[in-house]
Image (cartoon, rainbow, N blue to C red; front, side, top):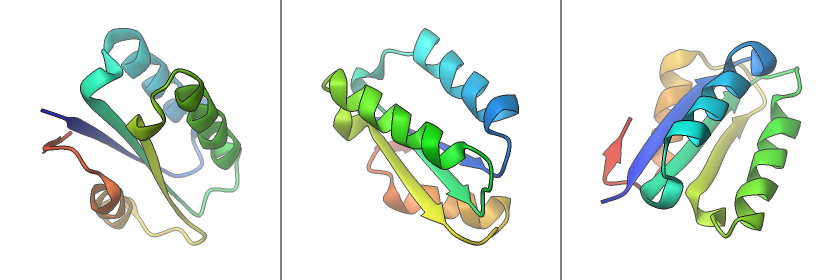
Length: 94
C-alpha cells in the first residue's frame, strides 16, 4: 500500500516547509510513501527547495516518490490541498 503525504504551502519555506519535510524524512521509511508538495504563488525560495528535494530523491532512486504541483497565483489552502491530491498516486492520502 502506498501513502501520499500532501503538503500545501505558501511562502513559509524556512519556517514550516523545511522542518516538516525534514521530520518526515527522518521518521518515515519512504519506500511506500509519496511526498506531494503543492505550492501556490510562492515568492520565497520554495521553488528552489522543491527542485533540490526532487534531485535528492532521484539520487537515492526514489524519484517516483516525490511530486509537486505549482501555481503562479495564490489559491488558498483548500485549492492547494486539492491540487496536491490530484497529482498524488497513493492508495491513502495524508
